[in-house]
Each structure stands twice: as C-alpha cells, then as structure tokens.
Image 1 (cartoon, rainbow, N blue to C red):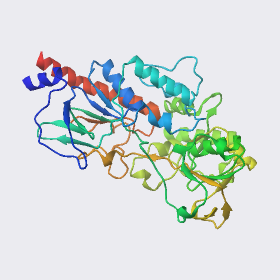
Image 2: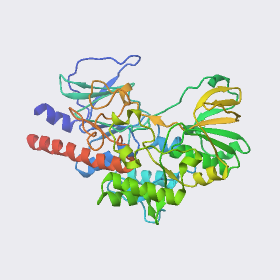
Image 3: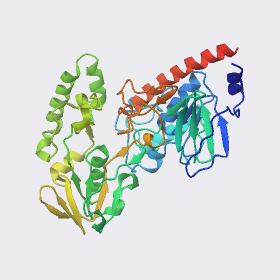
Image 4: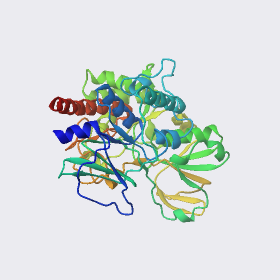
Length: 423
C-alpha cells in the first residue's frame, strides 16, 4: 500500500523491475505513469482520455508517434473527404459537433472538431514518440511501454492505434516494370495532377469509389478494379441517412428483415448493381458486418459502400469497371478476364491494417493474424491484467465512442478502489 501511494503521488517514481533491453535502442530513463498509458493520438486515444478525465482519472498519458493528433486524418486522406455517416453518429463522447456543421462534415471541419476536443479536455499527447515494445511484467504486475529513449511503467495500457495503422500495398506481377506512378490513397490528395490521364483505381471500397469520382471531376479517365462482391447502398433513403434508417429498423426487426428492406430499397433507388459489374454478396450488408472473424474468413464485401455519385459515373461510362489484375507490363495492365488496357497511373485504394502485434507482446487479446481483438464487438475492448483496446470495432467512430466510455468506467472503478485503500 505504501508503494502504491508513492506511485500515485510521485509521477517519477521508478518501481524495481528486472532489467530488459530493446534491440537497437538504449533506455536512458524509466517513468512511472499513475494513470493509463494510451498508445495512439487519433480520435480513439482522445476519446478514451477525455472519458477517463470525466471519470476522475486525470493522469493518463497519450503517446503519439507523429507530431500531431489524428495523423491519419490530417496527413493521409484526400481533400474531398467527408464523413460518410451523419455527424450524430461520428461525434466523440461528451462533446457534440457544432450545430452549424453540415450533416456530413468535411475533412477540415472534422479536424477542427478534434482540435477543439483536445483543447476542451486539456489533452496533451507526447508527440514524436514511437512505441517499440509493450509487455506485461508479471513479477510486479505492471505494464512496460518502451519507446526509443524512455520506458513508461503503468498498471494499465490502452491500445488506440486503430484499424488503420499501416497501408496495405498488394504485390502484382510486373509491378516494377510499370512506367507510370503507383501510389496508395494515403498519398492521394486530389485529381488535379491527373487531368486527361487514364488512371486505374484498385479497390472498390468507399475510398476507391470516391477517388474515382474525384478523378472524374478533374477530367481524368478513371477505371475501377472490382475483384470481390460488395454491397452498394445509397447514402440516404427517404430523406434520412441509410445508416440512421437501419439503426432505427433494428430496434424493431431482426437483421435479416432489415437487410431485405435495405436491399429492396437500394434496388429501387440505384438499380441492379450486378449489371454494372458490382455483384452483391449472398448475405445482406448487416449480416456480413455482424459475422465473427472466423466466419468472415472466406466472405468478401463485409463493409457496405455508401454511394455519393460514383454509380452514376459508372452507368454513364465515365468510369469503367474491370475485374482483378493478372499482371503489369510497361504501361499496360492485363486483367484476369484477358483484357489488356493502357494506363498512365495506378492508385491503390487497398486500405489499411492494424500493426498491434508488431509491438504488443504476450497478450491473448489481439489476434496474431490480423491485429484485431479476437472477440468481436461488443466484447473485444478488454483483455487481461489492465490491457484495453479502443477503435477496433469495425463500426467507425460510433464503435470507438462506445468502447471509450466502457474502458473509462472500468478503469475508474479500479482507480477509486485503490484511492479508498490509500486514504
């Protein structure tokens, strides 16, 4: 009890731990953190830190490897990006969006909201700090969070690096022979530099669809690679967001009934997407999102695409649709159906992945295969020995907010019990 009291009141108290080393690094200091260590300064890290403060836990430490909050949003998104869901489903806990913001805030509006959020709750991440290893020391019952120069020690660790920590860059035969630029959407800002060029966009998720539309607006000639089946839904139905309609219907009807309604309404509003080369999966959009990781193993199209105008461009022929890529050669792309087309550039809208398992050791919370919690939402937020995960629900910012509140409440209960023991 005396040792714990020292920990709480002395942020630089250094508990006795077995010495360890990080390959290639030399630890020059060890710092005790009375509250949780939060790895990641994006929306997830900010949300859980604000919730902890609201619960009376005011000694959390946010570690962010870049020099700003929300680096993915600030540095790796295209200019025309808007939130795909209405703002009421994307706001972080304890602070709604400004009333004068549109239904679907722009990238810049969302970033200004996050800056205001950090200011309101006095959240000050430690920037330019890359976490290289996190492990649980069973000898003393504490977590050791190692960076290149400092080891932070805490009773709790919250993983908030999210689903989109690293770009996924597929490999194609002849990739090195392609004469034009090949870039990931993380490097794409607008279609301004692609005017009058033939551009192949690989990936048919929300980003791929929207990049194609952006290229059209800049008088480029985009084509879209659609390798798997997917659900395309209108962004709004009957004057309300499709997401809002589905959430309302789920209060009264089972998933299969709601899926049937969504698909029927979508066919009426946007037509038969199969005729455009966009075949739908056999399972409905909500059924796919509710599948566990094992069930999803051989199922494609788990995330529905919300159409913001791309389908009309495909229907008019402004955007061509191709199947998977077989090989590249010079400025030619050969597809699996035998067609060969020339392109000036290739944009990879192939998404991101978690990198948690590269630095988090000795845990059974995250899967080694994909870096996501092994238990699907809503059960994947809590591990053992004070380990938590926020922002891995595959349900966007709404899932992040739900997890952040749960984690803060859980840690606050432990915090308050310890305070009673001390005093």
